[in-house]
Length: 152
Image (cartoon, rainbow, N blue to C red; front, side, top):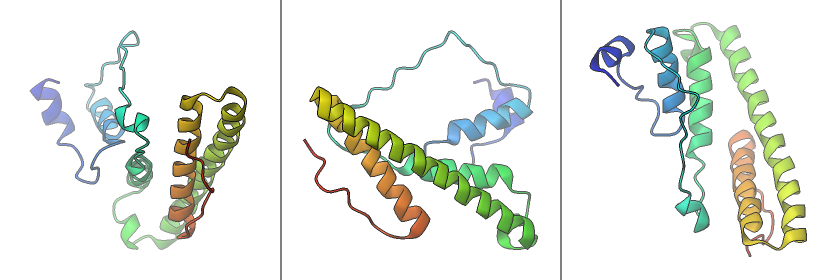
């Protein structure tokens, strides 16, 4: 990235530890007219932690934080415009429910696939979806749920 683009777009938001900061910053670069897209570029993500059965859920929280910050107007999230803020929080709840439904469908699909194929990778994907779904349930309802023993 060129320094001129950094100066136009400003620094990265302090609200993101990691995950979703690239999305938020891309929007700032686009607003500054400094975002260039290379469709032929490829990124390969090595998933060593996933192979060891360690799954991160911070990316989900960062996406929801980004959603709120991207959709909110200044002052909305601290109560100056209560009706719109309530609407925004309700929309975020709907987005979270959609994520939960997606993880539930994937969990069911991977469980079926794991039972049929008996491959370790499908069991890892099943466990990953269960971790994400459990996290979403905890975030949305402040409750913990269990999916039994899905480790293989």
